[in-house]
Length: 151
Ligand SMILES: Nc1ncnc2c1ncn2[C@@H]1O[C@H](COP(=O)(O)OP(=O)(O)O)[C@@H](O)[C@H]1O
Ligand SMILES: [Mg+2]
Image 1: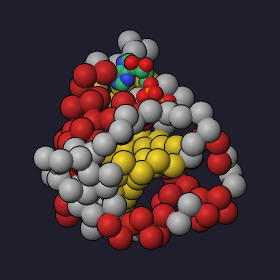
Image 2: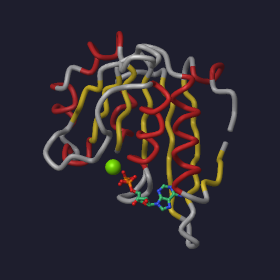
Image 3: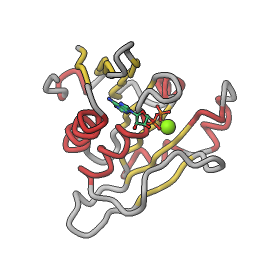
Image 4: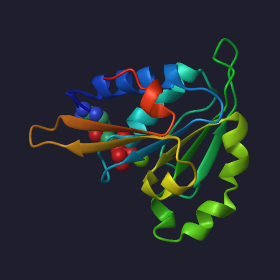
């Protein structure tokens, strides 16, 4: 399943669509090279959930928890940027995401490594095309195979 995201706005909107589907304990993995639009997608997800704080790609922080904002869905968002973790998977364990995965929605950039956190996850791979549009390939796994409504 893939969808073309012509503009940043399209990517934000696609993120909002994903965010509107999320429930506590859900895991979304975002994959793709630097500049592919993972953080833009995470912003859309945060918008749909209605959480506090700005979603960004902080240089030193690996994970940031965004508490629910008034009027939102009431689900906290844990946004992980695993870029700096590299191949050091032990650090991913140190983040204690298993605990977060009970009540928060967890979104991991550079997230392939997160596949082992739960079989139930939505993997979105972004690629940048020659005309600067993006292609999002969606791979629902586990319970997401039934939950993902299509693009
Ligand atoms: N279709 C698009 N979707 C997402 N971002 C886009 C798109 N077209 C251009 N951009 C730009 O590409 C950059 C993507 O950055 P970012 O989301 O931080 O990437 P990543 O988190 O994958 O490294 C932003 O500067 C954004 O404005
Ligand atoms: Mg990013």
